[in-house]
Length: 409
Image (cartoon, rainbow, N blue to C red; front, side):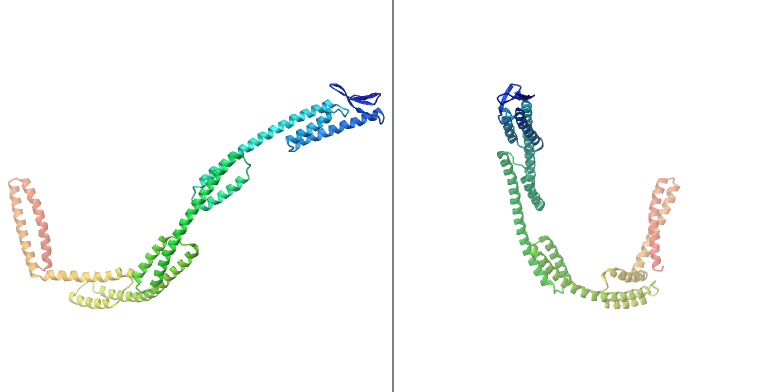
């Protein structure tokens, strides 16, 4: 009989393995020595050790499913429980039991991970739905449309939830996209209608602009072109394929008119600049009449200057007040000299002035006598009151005397 710490072979060739529950029959060996029998079944044991070690590594380092891991464990346990190997079978059972615990722990971890992922996916999809519903009310058509398309791609990359929850969220998400598309379609349909109306309006404006392009009625036509431009801006944009062509025609018609007007105005400006030089020379000639010594000669000379002035055409508008002001200054000086001469030689005016002066002188003399009498009587209040009246009459008298001097008397 032969034996080792974990097994023995009896005289009949039966091989036994020692376990916690006692010896168990491993098998019968008739082909060689007992040592060879033990060595053979010990190799069987080593094979189980290797398989269990490999399974432990797979469970630890790979994503082997719990179901497949448990099936492998059960398969190895059957081999261990069959007692067809010699070695510490109880230790193998213990390792398999621990492996079962590990697999179960991994199963729970994965279950919890899947629950977390599902919760994260739910929150992510709810956030996508909320954003999509907000975008559905946006008027930023391009940006909102691009963002909604990006949200769809994000949705596709998220894991599915339970069917009911996923369907409900997708329905809201899809409804928001549809609502946005409907609003955008309505907006652009309205925009198309507005642009068509703008095209018709601008066609009419172009036709009028082209009809006015050869007008020589410069002022009213230029004013009408300004009105047409205001109407053009108020009309809004036409369709892109029409807008540029209409604008080119509209602007081209204006350019024809304003180029012709500029040419005419350039000639006129040159003529008016020459007129200005002539009028400045006449103004200088008129200013030499001042100060007026001989009214009659000055009047005749100014009349001659003025006749030549009137024969000259227009001057530039911005220079007109300055050059005309010089002539008006001379004309006012002549008028003032004429008025002074008239006052000096007008008998009626002289008589009125002399009469007024006499009346005022008499009143002043009378007041002076009354003031002297009041002071002699000691009535200062009356004297002061009369003095105020005297001061006023004296001022009028002084003014009348001055006017009388203008008559040479």
